Image (cartoon, rainbow, N blue to C red; front, side, top):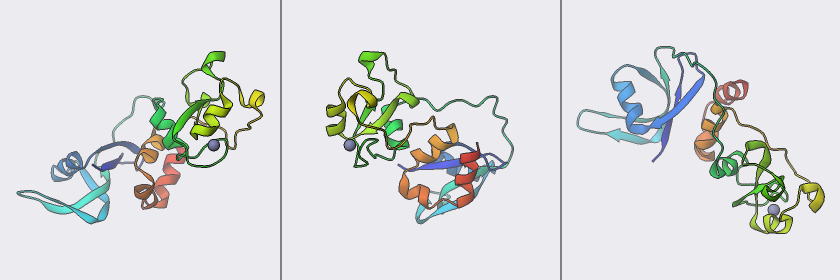
Length: 170
Ligand SMILES: [Zn+2]
């Protein structure tokens, strides 16, 4: 099931909701459609509309504080676009930069996507100890970045460019 990206009235990315929830927000005049899926329609008893990909709330919602995106293995793979941090090939595992055996934690800055081979080769060593430099430094995604990343590459590439900029600035 695809999710719909929800923007604040100020165009700032807020969250994602299910397609059904997005349609309810539109039908109750709480949100307007910014972008639809070109080939997907939502059909029901009283509705037949293009499936919304991005909606924008009609009223500004105050966000009390900016949370950090919660860490997860899946989140790390998505952040690194399933590319191994050591060789750039497709990654399916998550490696601890500072290994857990040396006190490394489950955090955004201490974990990277890794191919199984490199993960095994690096074992319980730091990149320095293993002589395996990181191709890219890990970073903490903002909640907005995490949302965009979670949409999947295909959906994301179809998003308007200003949205990526808005997320990068958030
Ligand atoms: Zn690798």
